[in-house]
Amino acid sequence: GAVVSQHPSWVICKSGTSVKIECRSLDFQATTMFWYRQFPKQSLMLMATSNEGSKATYEQGVEKDKFLINHASLTLSTLTVTSAHPEDSSFYICSSGGLAGATYEQYFGPGTRLTVT
Amino acid sequence: AQKITQTQPGMFVQEKEAVTLDCTYDTSDQSYGLFWYKQPSSGEMIFLIYQGSYDEQNATEGRYSLNFQKARKSANLVISASQLGDSAMYFCAMRAFISSGSARQLTFGSGTQLTVLP
Image (cartoon, rainbow over the protein chains, first blue to last red):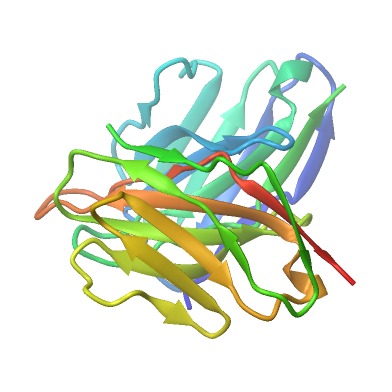
C-alpha cells in the first residue's frame, strides 16, 4: 500500500523554540493531509486539514499562529510548532486524505513524538 | 457531526480466545465508512478492517471481523484466536462519504486497550 513518512520520529526541544515536522507521501500524490495530535492514553484529535496550495483549515481551539501548516507540494506537508511549551508535548501524526467515494484510502505516517523541556 | 463511542477503556482476554471490542456511532450522514485501527506501543496506526454503510455483509479480514448492526449504530470488532501480539490500543473510527469535493477526515473513538494474557 501507499506509504507516508514522517520526520523526525522523535524530537526533544527547549521551551520557546520552534520545531518542524515533515510528512511525505512517498509513492502517491496527497492533495489533502490531516494532522492529528494524541496525548498519552487518549485518542487522536484532528488539529487541521491541509490542502496543497491553499491555507490549512484548523479545528476549533487549535491556534493557527502556533501550529503552522504548509502544504507546498503534493508530496510534502509540514507542521511547525512555534514557541513550543511543555504542554505541546504530544504525539503528532499525519495522514493522507481519502478521496470522496473511496474506501479505506487513509494512510498514516508513523508519528512524531515531541517532548518540550 | 459524527461521534464514536467506545465504552471499554480496557479489556483482558486469554490467549487463543475470542474477544469483542464495542463501538457505537452517531451520524446524520447517509453514506459513511467505519474503520478499526490497531495502535501498538510504537504509535503507528495499523488499519485492520473497513465496513461501508451500504455493505450488506459484515466485513472480515483474517482473524478480524466486524459485527455491523446498522439499526443499532454499532460496529463491534471481533478478534478470534487472540495472540499475545494483539495486545495494543484499538480505535474505532468513521468517515462520511460525499459525492464530490475534497477528502474527509476520520473521527476516532476514545479507544480500548486490549491485553492478551498468556
